[in-house]
Length: 202
Ligand SMILES: Cc1cc2nc3c(=O)[nH]c(=O)nc-3n(C[C@H](O)[C@H](O)[C@H](O)COP(=O)(O)O)c2cc1C
Image (cartoon, rainbow, N blue to C red; front, side, top):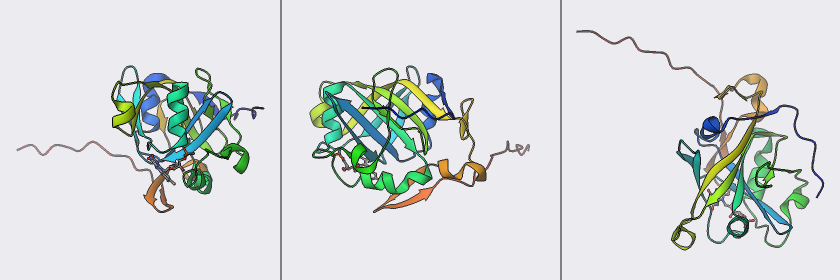
């Protein structure tokens, strides 16, 4: 499979900052590949769960094709799509890739993650994380939740730089998506800064 040129705006993210990429609860794309097959789906439920090493959790329904590829390959990608990819995010979350390659179907250009070779997207996306699946004895059958250790991460420096997000009107197409249900999303924006309160001294 030919790879697209990497985005000139993407930079590696230090692993101790990787949790910040999903700390604010963006809808993500979960990707996986195994034995010449690959797939991508949407997931609204993901979160950081451990600092060192950085670990995340993502809920992946037992019926999905993505889940089969993850358990077969031992890895997955978490991609943070920007607002410009809302329709694509909804599309890959509304059909299964079991019978067709969604990358081909929708013309999605994916690169390969540096550690595990999982599909990663850069153009139109704010960030990606590559994760090694943490296999728990009972979890494969008992739970929909998957745990992963982040082994590589990168972000578009126009919106995430030096360990910090910066949502501005200039990078609106990269603002993250937050799913309300049934294809309705809120796009993150209107960044505000909390200030230190002056304590009321009695
Ligand atoms: C915005 C959005 C968010 C979703 N979030 C989740 C989720 O957190 N967990 C999950 O298992 N499925 C979620 N889904 C559904 C899967 O993406 C969907 O079942 C997908 O078709 C599975 O594809 P696959 O069979 O190719 O793996 C979501 C769908 C959409 C549109």
